[in-house]
Every structure is written in C-alpha cells, then in structure tokens.
Image (tube, rainbow, N blue to C red):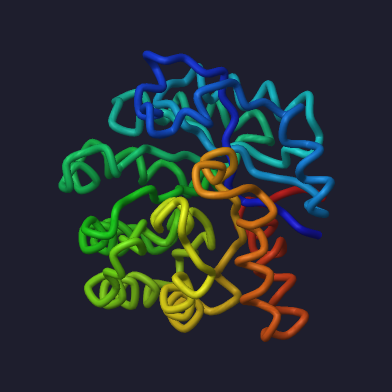
Length: 276
C-alpha cells in the first residue's frame, strides 16, 4: 500500500495565507480533496496524511472534517497551541477523533530558541501519553536545537519534514549533513522524503541535484525510518505530483522490495497508526 505522508488542503485566503506570495501564484487558489483524489489514483497512491498549514484549531477541525468525508485521507496532523496552559485538555478533545494522529507547529517561522521554551516543551510532553506524533518543520540552521528538543523526549515519536530544508539550489550540504547525522542517531525520529524540489531551482532542477542529500538521509536514517511525502500542492511550484513521486521511486529501485514498501507506505502506516 502506498501512502503519501505529507500533503495539504486549504481554501485560499490572501490574508491568512500571506506566505503564498506572488512568486507562488500557481498555488494561490483552493486545494481540496476533489483536486487530489484523481491525482492519487493516477499515481497509484492509496491514501494520504493531511498536514496543517495554518496555526489555528479551525484548521484542525477543517482537516478532520475533510478526512471524515473522504476515506482516502487516512489521518490528520493538526495544530494545537502547545504553549497554552490548557493544552492537555485540547489534545484530549481532539484525540477523541481517531483520525487525529499528531500535531505540527511551524517552527521554521519562529525564533530559533522557541522550540526550547519551557511552555512549548510542556506541550510536547503531553503528546506521547495520547499516542500522538509530532512533525518537525524546521530550516537546516535549526537542526542543532531540534536535536536538543528530540533528546528531551525519548518516548515521543517525531518526524522531520522535508529533510530540514537544506539549500539544494546552492548546494549547501556539509553543515546540514553533520547535523542530520546527529539527529538521526536518535531512534525516535523519522524523516520524510519530501519537499526537495522546492528547495532546488524551481524551474531548472535535475534529479541528480538531489542524490547527495538523499544518500545522506538513507545512510543515516535507514529505509525503516523514511517515508514518502509529496508536499502537494506546494510541489506544484517546481513541477507536478508525478515528477515529485518519481524522484523517490527512481532512487529506491536499488533497495529490496521490503525496503521499498517501507518507504512508500509501511513506515507512514506504522508511525501514524493508520487503520487500513
């Protein structure tokens, strides 16, 4: 079974979604399940995980409602204010819905030390008892603090989104590589094979541009902790769904059948606790 571990839905709002600037006009519109479902079918993908793109509980409710009404959406990673004193109650409330799998906060938009603030750490501490995951959305320069964060919670399941967004366009790799090695040494963190093309030259990337970075990810995390994700519709900035998926499937051809199945679906199923 193939599971896309990372995609988004939204009803475009120019104020709320101001991060989608005029260089991203192609995604300045609504993206809903009716848009994605035929794309998944064309690409032989059986289901997906919907990931939050807005920092609000309204976003979480919106995604859970979409998942309820579209069976191919296998789970939701929503947003809850982890720094709020009432976070435990909010997590318990959303956890009543079996489609609520985890939480993400857009750490890449915060000051680097935000993730180590005690109020935020208190929220992270409430996730594991409810069997909730945490998606790490950071830039490469935030990896050291990320290591510190993950180290504090050995029983918490973490997954690194978009391999921490190294600057593939400019070939920056050595500092990122060293930090990835340190992070991957922590057994409770996984990595999403996603978001690579948007960190490359959007209009002139070649598959070879990604190989040095992918090699590092597989060497450090291993196929048993890597999961395929499209980052649709953001991937449309630099190609299309099929081209994005092809980067993954082409690379993993050299792996065993079992390892390919792990990357393309089994790891996401196990990590997020998806019911098949």
